[in-house]
Amino acid sequence: MSTESVIEEVMKDAPFYRNSGGGVTLGGGEPLAQADFAAALLKQSKTKGLHTVVETAGHVPWPQIEKVLPYTDIFLYDVKHMDPEKHRENIGMDNRLILGNLEKLVKKKKNVAVCVPLVPGFNDRATEIGAIARFAAGLDIQEINLLPYHRLGEGKYRLLGRHYEFQAPRKLSEEEIDRLKNVAAAAGLKVKVGG
Figure 1: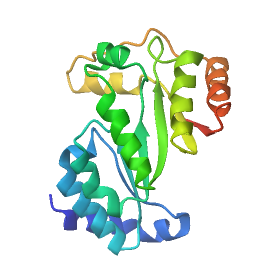
Figure 2 (figure 1 turned 45 degrees about the vertical axis):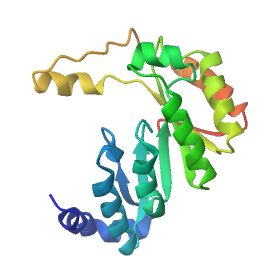
Figure 3 (figure 1 turned 30 degrees about the vertical axis):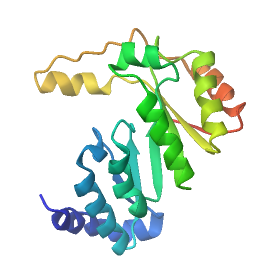
Figure 4 (figure 1 turned 90 degrees about the vertical axis):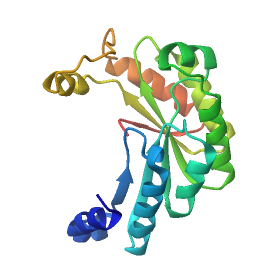
């Protein structure tokens, strides 16, 4: 697939983008694993006057992020945990590269919102969300998105005949989510629930 064919498809909805201010969002997986293609697609999107967003977990070499910098209006940047050992234990790698890339991104004066997938038993305590929120606020990030864990992916895996590795013990209640929202807001951040 070429960037031209993607843009051709995207531009079929151009009237909606003009009315809504919408545009192109690259998500994943990890779109920066294919940074050259992502940068080319974002560049073409900008030439068409489209708003651009990159969703990233930030676990890529910095030069891959640099490739998309000039063509990205907003980065939605996952931060799952502040503790490198707990991150390694649950995600499979520590978070030093992720947090370091976030710091570099903010220094480039890019518009960044931190996104926190809320996973029961992993990062759903006030101390964990407070640590992420204070880190983001300390970088002068203005917004945090709390993304409650859901089980929608399980059915997709079943349909593909694949085993779904992660089984969250439970779903967070509305009261728990509100409590975490208040913790993040106490750090001075605008808080969205659900992205």
